[in-house]
Length: 278
Image 1 (cartoon, helix red, strand yellow):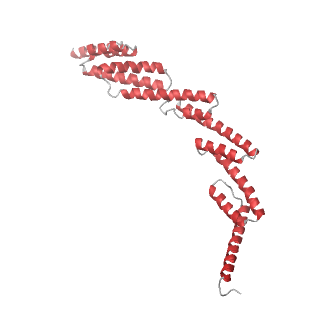
Image 2 (cartoon, helix red, strand yellow):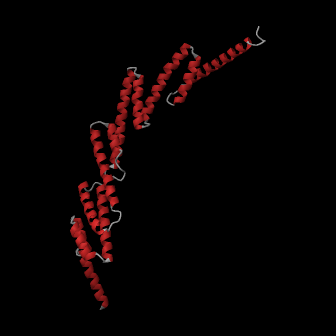
Image 3 (cartoon, rainbow, N blue to C red):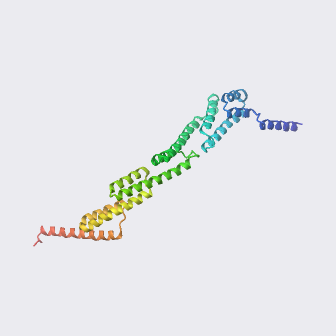
């Protein structure tokens, strides 16, 4: 008979839980409806002092808040909807003190809210073709902002590509006008902002190589060996100038000639001041 009674009690308890009539279920309903004061009153009247029910209530609050937080991060619920959930839980906790460290959730919410605002601002700048401002705004999107992070990274890459193409087009126009300093200034400024980008490096390599080729040719024609050697060494050290085998061969020959001339000049000076002269 005792086994039968226990079995019936278990069935009754299960029915109560499944029907949503358990004390913690009533507490949960108040929380989900945003009825924080009713939730507090019910907890104090029906749950306080009952260890298992207290634990269930705390676990529910944590689980409910975490699930809504995840939904918010993934864009499944709006900012206002999550703000309502967080506000309800905060008001309950301010009176019952069930969730230590709840303030950290408020801080994270503020961070993610700012992240979403950065993404929205980035879209506005992108539509206005202000790509530098767009990049700056998209960079403010946090990795934890699951709804927007991947999209923000794609927009940054897209913005950088468009900005890079625009700068290089303007730089080529300056070169066509023989405005070498203007072209260099454009690319240098873009590099300072965006860092090392393959397109800029390729442009600078072509630019420095073409400029040096003209300069090198002029020095060869002028016969100024020392200036040619100095210019070659400077070009070799700047990292952007491609030196052809022909240039290198000419440099070696001119350098050898300069060394030989220096030796002969030193010998002449020495002989003039010695007993061997004449």
